[in-house]
Structure formats: structure tokens, C-alpha cells
Image (cartoon, rainbow, N blue to C red; front, top):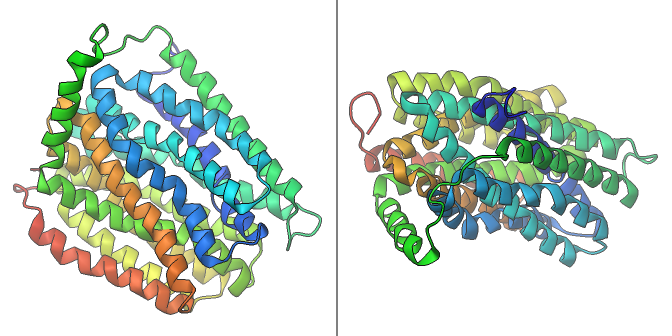
Length: 404
């Protein structure tokens, strides 16, 4: 496979199957599985968010480690979790054990995510926005397929309104199959690859590991730009956790339609990101991030006002466009601000803040929904996004054209 595909194409192919695996285990299957186990809104939000909490602790060390021992070796460790963790869901019989499995499953994206983005940054040169956007778009096609496929598996149950444990098991078996395929393909790609810093011991490498982390996290512009990604992903996490519940229990849609709504959001992001990435390379990244945050806030806040399937798809598509505007520019801007030797650390820092937002979204939404209705709960999260816009505009100064 390594001889047939270019390194970039091979990386995208491996990422596609890894993300397909993860999406099958996540939305809409996970929140509905937690609901099946008897979880309430707060508990559902926690179940969705806990795997992202893993990234808060491990993304920065994983990215920094890849600067020392090499990107591809570190990526392989992450892919092992994509391959084998989905099968552990077959053992879940209660909510508490589900939480343990979700935390461990989060190691897959915690390790693989920042390192794969650092690899793209290494080879992208002046086209970071475009190439990172293409990579993200290609790999999240797995998310596009995984969400409705998971919903379809559940909807195929004899009683579609109440899937049995067997249907959830089928979804997680499909997730495991995709993860194993990703690992097999990666082993082919990585065969014979040299590892960076080969031969250096831990004692020699550790000071470089620490100095890289200190250098990156001390840059306030990196922190602020990463925070915008984190806030946008707070809304993504909330939507991922509770759009399926809202669609099925409030709007009266079925599980397959709930998966389609998430798929519409993803496909809009996929189609828009390369265009937005190329635009950010040419005209600057800051304006796109600002417009994207506003678009996400407005579309997110409108969802509880809608029950019609077509109108909900429109809102989901608008949210996907806003997500594309933000994510096509944020990661590229962070790498613009960093030295090449610290791309792994930079992406780890970025990914950590990303995950803080993604994890807090479903948890915050769950807490709000125990006290308020969907409209007021979603309105709070939308307001947070809007309030972040002037802070970003004032806090991140870049040269003309938007590149620091």
C-alpha cells in the first residue's frame, strides 16, 4: 500500500477508517445506548464528554512525544486503541462501566489526532490551511458515514423505537471492524519507516520534551486561537450529545433521521473546509474564524425552535458551514505561530483546548437541560460563542493577510 499511495493519501485513508470506527461508537449510538442503560440528561452528557476528557490529559504529551520519537510511531499507538476498544462495549451492562470504556476509548483520538495533524503541517509548507483542511475533510468522511450508519443499525431493530442490546452490539462490532482495518492499513504504511530521534535515550530527550511544551504554551496567541476552536467544539459536543435526543424525543423523528441530521452537518463541513482553507492561506485566517463563530452561534441557537426535519437539516448545514470556517483556519494559524520543530507540541496544545471545549459541551448542556428547556439551554451556549468574538479580535494580533 505504501508503494501505491502517496504519504498524504495513505494518511488520509488510514484516518478515514479510524474516524469511521469512532463515529460508529459515538453519535447517535452512544447517547441512545446511555439512554437505554437508564441514564438521564446529565449522565448522557457525561458519557459523551468523558472520552474527550481523555484528550485533555493526553493530547499535549502525545504531540510533544511525537516531536521526540517520531510522528508515525506515535500514531500507531493511537491506532491500536481505534482497533481494539470498540469490542469492549460488548461487555457493558451498566452505565458505570460504560464511562470507564469511554474514557479509555478516548486515548484513540487523544494520541492519533494531534500527531496526524502535525504530520500534515510538516509537509504542507505555505499551504497549511488548504492541506490541513483537505486532510480533515477526507478523514471526517468517516464521521459522515458513521453517524447515519450507526442510526441505521439501530433503526433496523424489530422495535425501532426501542433498540435492543443486540442492535447496540452490532453497531460496536461494525466500529471494531473499521478500527482493525485502519490498523492493518497503517502497519502496511509504516513498514520500514524510520523513527525521528532514533537512538536517543529518555534522559537526553526529556529536556527537549519539556522545553518544547513551555515554548508553545507560553504564546498567548496560540492559547487564544486554540480557545476559539475549543469554544466552537463546545457547541459541537453539545449538539452531538443532544441533537439525537431532541430529534427523537421532542421533534418526533426516528433514529435514522437523527443520524442523517448529524451527517448533513458533517458533509457541509467536508465540502466547505478545503475551500475555506485555501481562502485562509490567501487572504488570512482571522476573519474566517470570526465569521464562523457567529454562524455557529446563530444556527445552534435556532435548533430548539424547529421540529420539521427539513428545517433541522438546514440548521445543521449552517452549523457545519460555521464549523468549516473556524476549523479550516484555527489549526493553520496555530502552526503559523510556532516553530516547525514544535508542530507536534503545538497541535497537542491545540488539541487539548479543543477537547476541553468538546468535553464541556455535552456536560454543560446536560446540566442546563436538567434545569431549563432546550431553547434556554442552547441559548446560553450560543451566547458564549458570540461573547468570544470580540475577545479573539482584540487578543490575537497578526500581520497583514492574517498570518503571524
